[in-house]
Amino acid sequence: MMGTSTRLAIIATMLSFFHSHLCYGLKVPVSLRRVSRYGQVGQMLGSNVSITNREAIAYLAKINLGGQDFSLLLDSGSADLWVVSSDCSSPDCDAIQKYNKTPSLNLTSWPFNLKYLIGSVSGTVGFETLDLGGYEISSQAFALADHATGLQLGSTGYSGILGLSFPASASIEANLGTDLLTNLFSTFGNDSEKFYAYKLGREPDVTDWVSSDTSPSTPTSSFSVGELDDRFSNSTSDFWTSPVHPRTDGTYDYWKLPLQYITINSLQLPLSASRLPGTAYPIAVLDTGTTLILGPSRDIENFWESIGDGAAGNITRKNRAGEWEVRCERGVTVGFVLGDGGGWEWVIDPRDVSWKDGDEDGWCLGGIQANDGIYSADWVLGDAFLRNFYVMHHLATTSSPPHIGLLNLTNSESAMATFQQERGKDSASGVHIRVPELRGHSKITPTVLYAMCWAIGAVGGSFATLLYRGIRM
Image 1: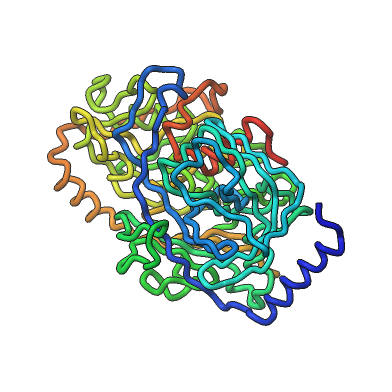
Image 2: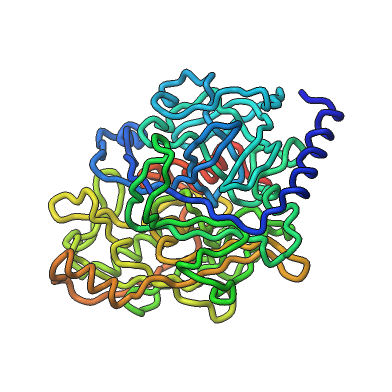
């Protein structure tokens, strides 16, 4: 373990670098790559069903750590930075870029352990020079993952996680090392620049950064720190904003917003009451590390049965793995009313409600699925929600708490027209809202968590971790 003098020297070096290389905003390219989402999901669910023909979308950011390039999962649902090391001999670590120790590495003896619902990662905390979009941190705390099990990293192509949530959700304790987000903003003199923004593209970018040094010529995704991408907006005043929902002690762990209700073709679908104390509405986390939209099983059942035409199994159904499916031609306009007070409705593309990839016999995977194991929130708004908007995450300033900004980039009418052109005629009748019989959540039961979301993120990663080690409340 490093001594106090070494730690102070590291901090002094870092501060000296920050003051002499102050960054006034940076853009970081984000690569959109389609990767296998399920793998051995049948085994994980205790069934013989293996659904390998459907794909998810992962959003990978390129970083340079110790002079080595890596593609990491961009994850607003966690706060840790970890990279697979060359010491990892687990099958999970095969065929991916690994970190090789460098002379600039300051390795500690502090252990790092994360247990996910479908796997785990462990290693040691270290400090290394990190470059993110030209912004250099001379001594960034990160975890060298020496062992990984059940995460199937080799089939996804990413080498670790780039966590962008609040320090309270990190596994690397603040007294051991400063998280990436805090380091990035530590010397931003202007409070108005203490934000990051992203647009998650719908189409794959053309370049795989793991094997190429050139960035995509026409990237569809964007990630920036301290400034906006002018393809989407030139001013933070363009965004609708809402304060981040705090924990009961007034601190913050995840990027949360109240979710008042959902609309289906402009009809209101009531939701179960929040499991969190002292909240007027259910609470949702915005998480780029989760593929789909996840909510309480009772609400999800009401949602899909409201979309059906009353004939059980004709329009919506559960498959053998417990996932909700919908007839591929069934098109509905779904909105999420977020924030306190009057709230604001955010409508998503119908293609994010019904996933065409890998459809079987005219049935498509639902983009909104059930999970009752989300302990620090009620809902997770993953990529299926987020890619419809330009999203801004702003840290607290001297005059305001942290807040989230959304800017609509989806025209609901044109999105529906595109959906109908691609899918064909929808023969189902109108929406029939199913009103919940009881308020509150059903008890937590075994659920198809891995099938509902990406393997890492607020549910697949951070929230799944809560099932084993709990969260600091």
